[in-house]
Amino acid sequence: MPFCRHHCGYCDFAVVAGQDGRAESYLDALARELAALDSPRPVDTIFIGGGTPTHLPAPLLGRLLGLLRQWLPLAPGGEWSIESTPDSLGDDTVAVLKAGGVTRVSIGVQSFQDRLLAALDRRHHAADIAPAVERVRAAIPNVSLDLIFGVPGQSPADWVGDLSRAIALEPSHLSCYGLTYEPGTPLTKERNAGQVTPVIDEAEREMFVTADRMLGAAGYEHYEVSNYARPGFHCRHNATYWANEPYFGFGLGAARYLDGRRESNTRRLDEYIARLAAGRSAVVQSEQLDAADRARETMSVQMRRAAGIAKDEFADRTGQDFDAMFGPALKELVGLGLMTDEAGRVRFTLDGWCVADSALENLWAASLPAGPTMPAS
Picture 1: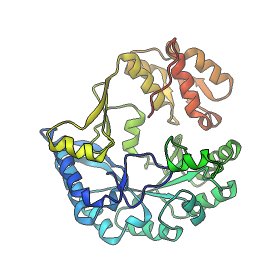
Picture 2: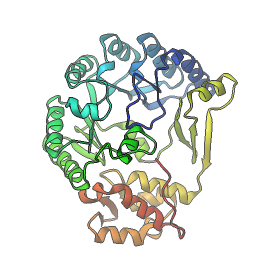
Picture 3: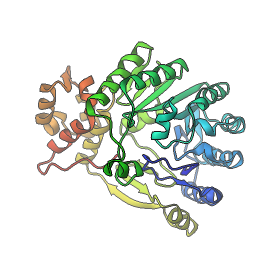
């Protein structure tokens, strides 16, 4: 759901701000895209990302949830997540979420310090966070919080403070993301102009390790590079993605992976609405992956999990031999202490997780003579 109160300076997602008047037209287009399924498709998990889905007025949010119930009915015991911000979770909104069937709410907290929220160009305040968490938890107990580290002006001590305040709220799940300077975003332009000074790599690594230590001590399992959960509260929807299993995707900029085909929709709101209104598909990119490419993608997402990859399961799943594809790079990474290769299972070490993206690029490149880089996730 692309609509936001404000487009934050670090965000490069397919979002729009100041266009709330087009929300009904967007939902009309989404309804047409869903109707192309021809019949309802029961699913085990649903994830409504953003943008800020909870920015929608309660009646339109209710319509969105109704469309999903109609075309993607949730299996008994299924997980239904929605992203939100602390300032978008009023009583009316929370009531609609509960009545609509949502079982898990992810709140984009990012920081508990107003000066760091300002550095991220966020519009909520630290004082908004705890009331929003309690308001949601009274109706929907499964609450996840998002935090960002490596924010300009943030010290390791600041990060300890953010983690401490997050732990005190006792969420069932926490996502801790290192700030990324995405090309073309206002924040990246400010960095390039010398107006913003990034946190140095050593401090950012310290913050990552601190999160692992503090959250582990508080009872959270570090089950994916950026994700921590209390036992039994791993995000089931994202686990599907990290396993490289098939998934649907609908809406502006949405991606899907079905029958070995990767597709993505247009990121332009005007084009999305116009295409669906004309009875056309919103897909603008489509690629049928061969067996080797499917194996590479399986490696690149499964390795982000704490469980890593069991080589025999990888072979059964992809028809490819892990060592034959990635062996030389794997041996080098093991020698550097970034991965382990024991009892037929490959995993990142904590040091390896700190440089996961570059390590995965090395594995990917080793599997082809030309050494191509991984496609953007």
